[in-house]
Length: 386
Image (cartoon, rainbow, N blue to C red; front, side, top):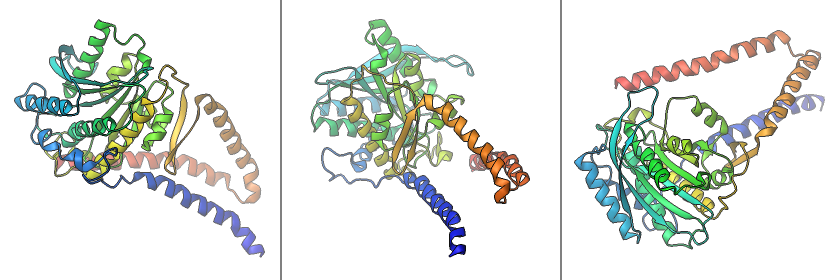
């Protein structure tokens, strides 16, 4: 009995470790793709992917004849849904400190599904241009097709409270030109009097597979929509992304004061911006995951009071949901953690904890992170040679 009592703490720690592993692995599985026969109010990857032959069969960079064909197809599909799309043609500049300025003429596609009692608007966004060498099935054709399927599903159900605006941006690959053109046009017409009442749901793809990740937020009060989406997320990734040079269309909207969420699937990044970004390599499960996440987020935002922006929060995925707490709790929790470490070092030696061993473990932990970075960089280099 004494031996068993001594083993209880170790067994408890093992169970906790296993539960943590399960919590980490469960969200990494994408949804099963739904067939074309799925209920009309549900998102179907089969219905979305069926549109891709007209969107991502060949490369269609901004200004190309192929992109004009895609634009005409998208306009026709939106009209088939009963909407009245318009092409917003405008000249816009990029805004980058790291690359030479680019100015281009872009043609955004915009349509509105009116709300019943709007408190603001939800802006559902994906870019419909590709890089010159890629068909752009994942970046960003799948998400353009997903938005068409989301709009179809929403049109079969009850009217949302808030306006839903669909925006297919042009020239994203050249420096977010379409998003900046849209923001400039709004400023010229004074449409966005209170930009915080606009919530952007931006869909991106940095690889042809993987579960959907909500990796960036703009503004506050959006955790309920993230929780509704079921996407894998953590506010820590948001903090890391802020330090990276990467941009998406959400960057331009955030600079204009709008709030928003950035969703993407990112596995298989070696195919990103290459000729391998084609329909054959696109994972239908990832399309399903994205569609379900974005549809759920839009429905949640579509019924919310967007005049209330809420407060900043820390959040992370756990067991298929999103746990959150106010950001002001971070310093107290950090202080409690430091106190716990101090108590462990004080009382630990009495129970066999070696201070030197703890110090060695703490000192070598950064080496694990450095090793992961080196291994990842080497792997990316190898992929780039293939």
